[in-house]
Image (cartoon, rainbow, N blue to C red):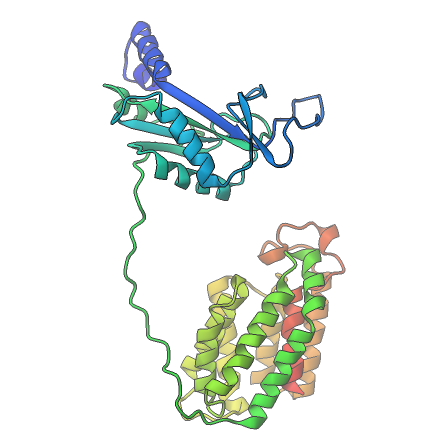
Length: 387
C-alpha cells in the first residue's frame, strides 16, 4: 500500500497514513509443524512432538499460544479462518494472503489455500507464496485484510517487485465439455490367434518377472517404481487379450493404445501414443507380418520422440526403441534385434549426464554404471518378441 501510494505521487504523510490504515486492518495467524533452525546454532531439539502442531507461533521462532494434535488440512484451515474472521466486520470485503513460512511443499500450500477458501469468502487472494519466511519452518501464515476505501486500488497497483504475486480474484475452475472419440465397442466374438497371444504373453510375463530388478535399478536413478509400472502395464495387456481379435493387428494395437493411457507415469502416455499411432497406420485387413508392422513401429517410435522430446543418448526408452525400429525396417534378423536391444540398454550405463527424463537431476557419480530401467524393460520385451 505504501509503495503504491508513493508511486501515485502522494506526500510522505499521506503514504504513512495509508500504510498505518492497512496495518491496523491486518490480522495474521500462523500454524506450523516445526520451529525454525536459527543461523549458527544448528538444529535444536524440537519443541513439538511428531504428532503436534503449534498455533500462533511467531516468524522469528517465538512459541505459539497453544499446541494441538496434528489435524487434516481442512481442519487447520477451519481453525485459522474462524479465528481470523472473528476480528473483522461481518460481510466486509476481505483480501487473504497465504504465506509459506519456509519449507511447505508447493502442492501442500495449494491444498491449504483451497481449504482456506472454503471457510472464508475472499474478494482478493495473494499467494500462496514465500512472502515472509522463517527460514526452514514447516508452516503457513494467513493474513486477512479488511478492505476499506482506497485499499483495493493500492492492492491491485502494478509493481516491479518480483517476489510479490499479483492479487487475484479467487474463482472455481470451470469444467469444459471435451468431446472425445468413443472407445472401440467390445467385440462380441473376437477372432483369436493363439500363436500371437502366446508371444505377447511371453513378453508380458518376462516383464512381470523383472519387476524387482527394474524397481531396484530405478531406485538408483529414479523414483523406484519402474518395475511396478511395467508390471501393471503388462497385466493390462494380458487382461485385454481375451477381449479383442488378436488375429487383427489394427484391432489389438488400437485396444492396447486405449488401455495403456490409464497406466501411471509418462511411460503409459507415451506407449499409448506409440500403439495408437501404429494402429492408425496399419490397414484394417493387415496380417501379422514385418512388412505391415515395421513401418508402423518406426512411425510410432518417431511420434513419441516428437511428442515427448527424447532423442537417442538421453537415457530413455528411445535409446533402445529408435535403433531397433531402424533394424526392424531394414530386415535385421530377430536374434540380432534382440542382441541390439540388449546392447543399447547396456550402453546407457555409460551415459553419465543427461538433460532429459528421470535422470536429469542426478550427477555423474549417481548415474555412472547404472543402466536406464526403461531401456532394460524395453530390451526384455523385445527379446521375448524377437525370439
